Image 1 (spheres, helix red, strand yellow):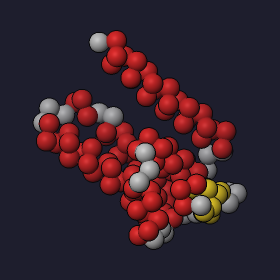
Image 2: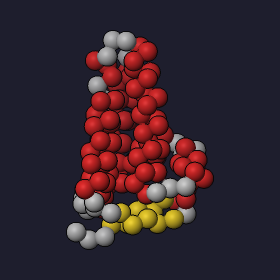
Image 3: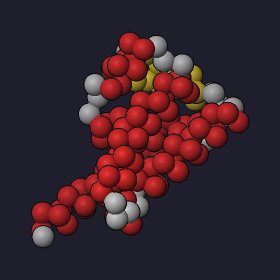
Amino acid sequence: MEQAKLHIDELNKTFKISHTNKNMRKSYQFQLTMAKLGQLNDVDDVNEQMKQVADYSDVLIDFPADVLNLTDKQKAALDDMEQDKLQELDVTLALKIQGMSNAQIADVIDSMRDSEHGDADSKSEK
């Protein structure tokens, strides 16, 4: 598998992405966490919903920090990013670990954006 790279503007740094089993497992766990968040409407307990959202916010920082071996200062810079942009970064990282091409990743990110806009459109129509 070709050595993938990921540039993070907020850190002004390009990282090499390792396709290790350890990183693959972490990328799958991140995606599982995202999928669970997408099912929040199935959770009746508001406290549980908020806990899952808060936990997900932590995962958005912890996943790239762990995989890319970020410093505390770099983690803080990620924490200052807009959540949508940080989520796109994490998805990009997960998919690069899994060996997807830049074109495939761009399609996924575009679909995410379309889905978010569709959700916003449907909420504004109510």
